[in-house]
Length: 281
Length: 313
Image (cartoon, rainbow over all chains, first blue to last red; front, side, top):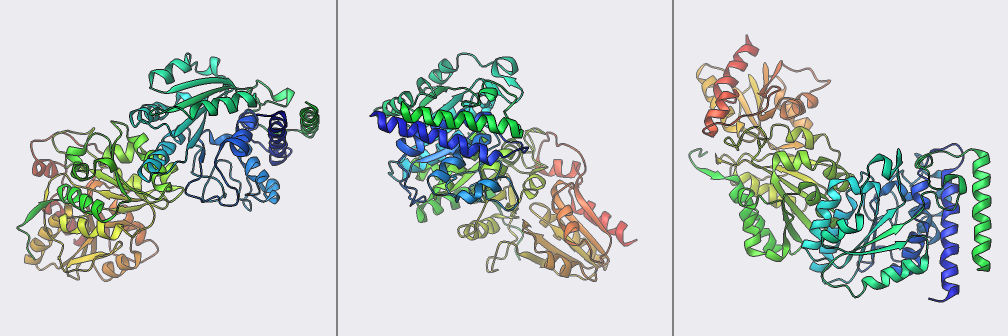
């Protein structure tokens, strides 16, 4: 991967963060923290890893993207806006009666969204259904399912984890956005789930742990999944909740919160500076 | 009309599913380890590659079905009515009903029909639960002829559908030549004094009640309401109009099932006094046989007759 390409992806990740802030607006609650922790992952998937043509979003051969942690959808909307699938004019109408951007992913409302998620724990199972359909139809698409680390407490995740390995689905790739925080506090304080790698391994998955903000590591991890046969892979991405905005980082305060005018200004300044930095990298 | 023949709805369901699989390669069947009871196993025998037993995991099964449907498949998910409607409720709501996709949900061993297994396995709430969901179609066939016609109609039906399936042999009442469509309320007997709306196993008991009432000079119209949702409201109003009593009969709680649906349909209309035969705020229990438990819970022709007498007094 050449530096230009990497820089481009970092730039996109930053642009997605800025879009998220625009969707948030001032004084409106939004799931900021868990959207921002995903920026590099979502940028890498939509702009490099996935076989996905924004001009043909219903192509049966397209790779599928399922955001099981549906509350992080603002970052997915940002990617779909940057790809030209969602009109930019929708940004200001996020979570309004006249807009098409719902608080959680809704395939009926928003082009580019593949399922309905938001009630946590369901996305991996939906992804398994899509992966099974690929096998039945002899299609080569892959299914990428992003989950949260707080979401690991949902029992259905582990039902799905067992099923994906029982059905030997190498065409499903799980991603755990391990940002260390959930709605009411750190995952260690609220409901500690240790040894996550060992759990997935014991459920029959190939496990890769990476820094989820390092795009080189992200791309390498997906590269490694290509040679795996007969078993699913999960990428556990260590991330920072609220990444990119100093006052929101590593905090559950901004899991679902609104920004003041002052906070918005600081946040935008920080992200614009970061954008300039990535250009000179 | 012959009422001497009986047949197993679940056996017919399993056979039809296997036939359907032959005609349509998009049919896939999911099971949560009850295939011998639900009879989905008949599909597995023919099409093992399109049959997915997910183990005892109903929630996972419902969401996997959603993923399959989103990729153009027509999944049938199977379990006992109590587990598939209750345990997987949020998955059916979120993964299936909100996107309004083609998933067929077979709730087997419904009502008290699993008489021996008792309250944890009997399902007296499933129609209420499923009826509350937007986009959901709720079906309750009364016999094996009707379930075949239903499944045929479902081949071209859009959106999620719940089918309530009895575990036991039930008398064949559906006239083979009758043209069925989803939503149809079938009049099995005419009468102008009483409108008797029933579904599933209670249709035969309602016909028996009507017979008894006729001998006393009371004429009851007996209606098979096998589509609880979308309910043909106009038909309910038409069949009720001019009667002196309206009674509903279901092997289900009276909270949210057929009785509620009929009362909802009649809202804002002038109508005769209405009462519900069903289960009033109770769980089931184990019994030696099906007849015994239905009697214990007042799901009999005698109870229907008594209720009508009371309304007509």
